[in-house]
Amino acid sequence: MKRVLIIKLTSMGDLMHALPAITEAKSKYEDIEFDWVIDKNFSSVAKWHPSVINTIETNHRKWKTNIFSSEVRKEIKDIRSKINEASYDFVVDMQNNLKSAFVSYNSKQEVYGMDKNSAREFPAHLAYKNKIDVDKSLHAVLRQKILLSSSLGYETNLEINDYGIEKIAFEKPDFDLPDNYCVLVQNASWPTKLWSVQKWQDLIDYLEQKNITCLLPSGTIKEKLRAETIASKSNLAKALDIMDLNKVAYLIDNANFCVCSDTGLAHLSAVVGTPSTTLYGPTDVNLIGTFGKNQAHLIGDNGDMEAISVERVISSLRI
Image (cartoon, rainbow, N blue to C red; front, side, top):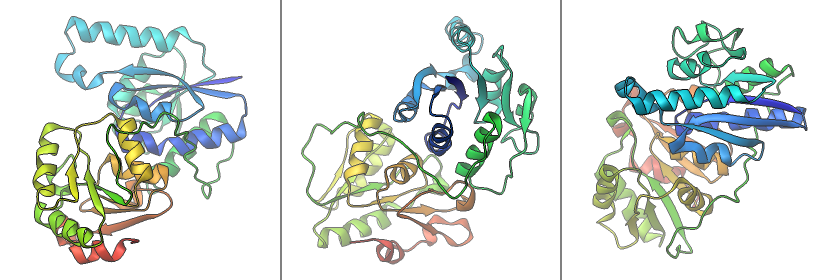
């Protein structure tokens, strides 16, 4: 039995990028099992993969501002105990930034991670005993596969990329789903990744003519208020209450298609294989765009999301 501890805390899309690497490792070593150190807000992602046995959940977003509080010091101590009480054959930092490096530093076992020329943040590489060179020009999914395969000692196949999840944890929301619906993910973490309210409404006008219901999930109150404004123009559009990620996953998995801003739920559409069009401004899609089957990328001129017309989005849809 090979036991591997993965250290990868956030964010939603980044966590999903690690799943094909785990699937490939399982195909190489039938008896391999993984534990995963992960942000508690996104721990569902790790639990979707059948090879992940245990999660060690953090609330590390509070560490920076409350590092000296007794609550945070206790949490760090608890995490240190959990990652060191088990005997792992390998410990691999698959995030390679300063927060994950801090967790890696607390491991008594030797940690594998990217070298100084490959890591996402300098000087994260100093926390790793075993440093691996990974080409920065590759997509994040492929970088994860190279890192894990190099750590565990097998040859990766960059042509095969299977997320390998099981959907048994997906949960049907507490309302009746329309027979014909799409999911519109209008929210994003940065203003430069937002498409205008008017353009979302114009898209909904078109979809209403096709008798397609539009469901708009949100992760925060602010996002829901914006979704309500967008949805207010049509009886076939609905801003959804904030839901558990497993319920959102069910929605996306069963949707006809998705149209997404550049955010974590766009990557979820790739994980489950739902046809999706994702809108990009400043993001380099070759490095961190949605990765998988049925994925269309529309990129605004000069990194400007507003340069993407409603007509371009409509022409990308499979209706």
